[in-house]
Length: 512
Ligand code: XMP
Image 1 (spheres, rainbow, N blue to C red):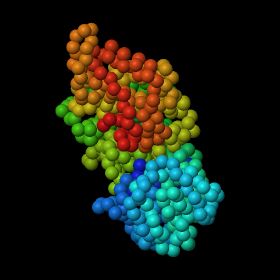
Image 2 (cartoon, rainbow, N blue to C red):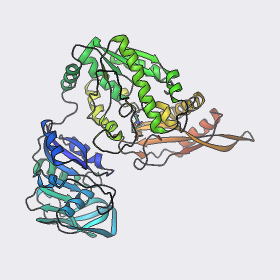
Image 3 (cartoon, protein in one colour):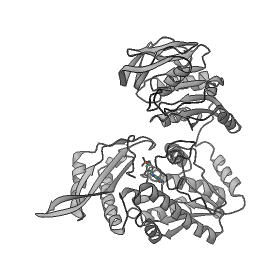
Image 4 (spheres, helix red, strand yellow):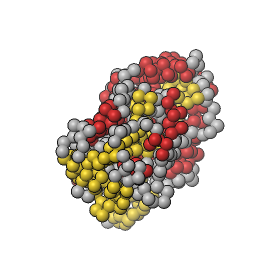
C-alpha cells in the first residue's frame, strides 16, 4: 500500500497531518523524528513509501536538544514537505537562514503565492493561511526558489528546483488554512504520485482474515468494555472465530452507574456471548494507597491481564484480542520514541510476563472516527457507535489521588447527575465526553446555615472528533447551574463545583 510518513517533531498538529492524508485515501503513519533512512528502508517490505512530511514542533531549531533528523532522508530522493518547524529545519539543512522573527505570527496571515507550481498549483495569488511560529526563514535554501511570502515572512514557502522538496511556514493541515487540503493533495498525488489504497471500512475480510490467521485453530478472548473500540473489535472477532471467541467484561468496581447492565445489553444486541467477571475487590485491593496516575494505570493494566489469564485458563484460550487504537499506542509512547502522554491501560500497562501466546489488536492502526465508520459498516447501531467514550481505567483516573469506595460512590453519583442533565437538555449531542472529576481539594461551604467542609467536583465537557485534540465546550449557564445545584444538593460531601476550561492540548481530556 502507498504511504506517506509523517516525521514527528512534537507539533500539536502532527496527528492532524496524518489524519488529513488518510482522509484523502492514502495511508499515513507517524514516525519519530530520529527515524533514519535505513529505518525507513526497513519499512519498505510493509509499505510503499511515496513521500515524507516533516511536522511542526514547539522548539526553535537553534535550541539545545531541539529535534533534528537524518540528513540522509533529505538526500534519499523521496519527496519531502516540511511544515512550520519542518520547513525551518529543511531550510537550515539546505543552507538557508533561519532567524528569530521580529514579529511572531499566530493566527491568520495572507501568503502571496509567487510560483503556482508543484504543491502550490491551483492556489490563488493570495491565500489565507494559518501561522503559528516564532522563527522565520529569511534566506533561500540552496537550489530552491521562493514560492510564497507573507508580510513578516520573506520565505513563507519554498520549492526545490527539482520540485521534490518543499517547505511551508503555515499549517495546511488545519481547517483555518483555506486551501490546505488542496496543497496536501498536490503533494500526495501530484508530487509523490501516491495511489489511494486506504479505506478503513472497506475490506472487513482483511480484518477477519488477519484475526483467524493469527488465532489458527485455537480459541481467543476478547476484552469487551462496551465502548466503540472494543465492541468493534468484538464484532470482527466474532465474525472471524464464531464460538471459539469468548468475550469478557471485567467489572473493575470503577464503572459508572449501570455500566455492567449496559454492556450486557450491548453484547446481547451484537449477538456476542459475554462472560461478566466481578473483580471489584481485586482492583480495589491492588490500588490501595496508589495515588500516582501512571502507577494507577499500570496497576489496572496488570489486574486486567491477571483476570483475563484466569478466564483464559478456564476456556482454554491462547490469544487475547483488544480494541487498542492508533492514538492509544502513540500516547502510550509505543510508536518509536513518541513521548509518553499517559499509559493507556491496554498498551503500556501490559505486564512483561504476559501468559498469552499473543495479543491481537485488529484496530491498532485506526483513529477513533475510522473505527466508528467501520462499526457502522459492520451494522452496529448508531447509539452504540456514538456512545461517549469511557476510559478503561474507569473512575480511577477521575479520582485525583488515592482511591477508596467512598470516593467512588461520590464520583459515581456526580457522574450520573452530569450525564442525565447533559443528555436531557440535548447538549450532550454536541459533546465528545461529559463527566465529573473528584478533585483532591477540600473546600469550605455553607449548607443550611452551617459550615461544611467537603469535596470539590469538576465538570468536564469537551468537543472533539478523534480525542487527539479537544476543545472545552461552552454549555449554557442554566445547564451548569442545574448541575451545580444538584451536585451540592444531592451529594452531601460536595461543597463546591468548578468547570474545566482547558483545551487539549495543553491539557488532556481526562484529568489523569
Ligand atoms: P486523554 O485523557 O488522553 O484521553 O485526552 C483521550 C481519550 O482516551 C480516553 N482514555 C482512555 N481510554 N484507556 C482507554 O481505553 C485508557 O487508559 C484511557 N485514557 C484515556 C479518554 O476518555 C478520551 O476519550
